[in-house]
Amino acid sequence: MGSRLLFLARHGEQDRPEEEADTGLSARGRRQATLLGERLRDARLDAVHHGPLARAAETAALVAASLPGVPVHVDDRAGDHMPHDTDPAGLPERHAAFLTQFTEAERRDGPRVTAGAVARFATAPAEGDVRELVVTHNFLVAWLVRHALEAPAHRWIGLAHANCALTVIRYSSAGPPTVLAVNDAAHLPPELRATGLPDDYRF
Image 1 (cartoon, helix red, strand yellow):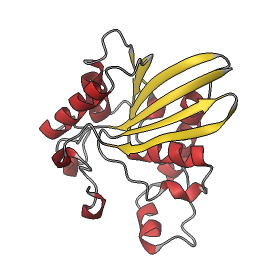
Image 2 (image 1 turned 90 degrees about the vertical axis):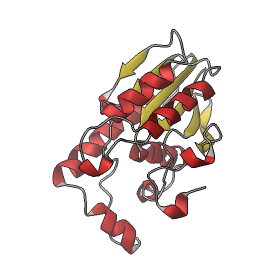
Image 3 (image 1 turned 60 degrees about the vertical axis):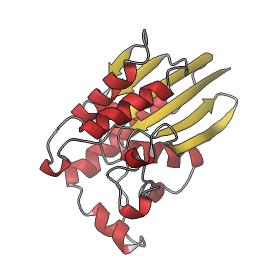
């Protein structure tokens, strides 16, 4: 019997996101990532995986500074991609409008990459216990929570995660996934929580 304890974290606050460029972290984002690393210091992780964009790579590096000896791997499957080509019919107006921002290529390629992420990270090993952190983006965290709960496919929309907050899911060969924590930002002071989200998501 095997199990995987999967820690998921959205990257830290991006520097100059309005430029729509692949920039690294802001000063706030670096502090968020450092505090996340301190939170995970005793988590006994086997590996850290991160997407290829600069903000995810820098977050992973800062987290790993608190995890000596834990290997760090870049993985395209942990990147920023549309997880599902969701039909807007019947969705709330703001959700339907949100879906219009994606290109045909993103609607085609994103779900394929996400399926690879599910196959790699959202399964239990045949035997042994694995504990991994994936530093990724809001869409993949939302999709993996939806997947674990077996919620309707469109429910990835509207799940908003704070920068460097933790979501934890346990996968076991003995049964269905268990969502242990979602958007846990207890390691972040109030002024560093929910960065980049609308005001009504601040807490």
